[in-house]
Length: 192
Ligand SMILES: Cc1cc2nc3c(=O)[nH]c(=O)nc-3n(C[C@H](O)[C@H](O)[C@H](O)COP(=O)(O)O)c2cc1C
Image (tube, rainbow, N blue to C red; front, side):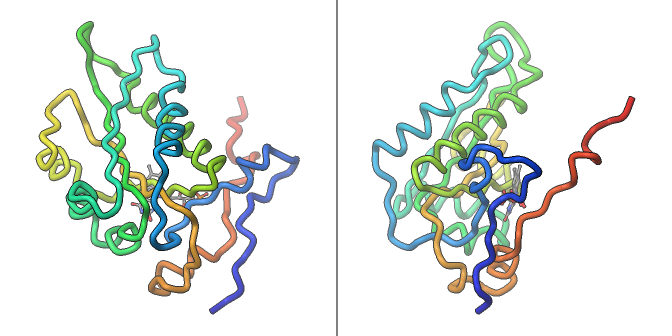
């Protein structure tokens, strides 16, 4: 096994240590249960995220490991995600609602993503790691949990304590040891 690489963000100037240290791992420490206080803190962080018109178009389906719900969510993941995600302490489905009683909510996906980001950083503060997934069957998940429009399952998060990737298949463990990379700021700035 290669020595673990430092996966901290390499930044031009210091950023908050929580942001620099956050990484999406696919290796989870085994047999870790989230405490009720941790779960509440994660949901509070998401709940206090901003949203367009304070519409709060986010809903969450939380499935702790070793529950029937966990297995039902797991079965809706793409095969490439199912194996590593099975070791997480919990799977959390991020569901957006595309409308409320007043009409359509065009910013719902943006708002849900922001709530998930808040949850992610609270997770880091709790000593937890999160990996988000777009690789799942949204229609199957909606059918499994009877989520009818305007509710739309949008992402699934695996949550747990980061573990040693050596127990994973090398195709998964390898990338999880690599340094994290980003486009340079120059490429992100649109020059008028
Ligand atoms: C919307 C979204 C979908 C993602 N889908 C998957 C996925 O299906 N499987 C996976 O292993 N990682 C997935 N990821 C994780 C990304 O690959 C990861 O965040 C990215 O490589 C950057 O790594 P970092 O979070 O450690 O900086 C997803 C992340 C996001 C935000």
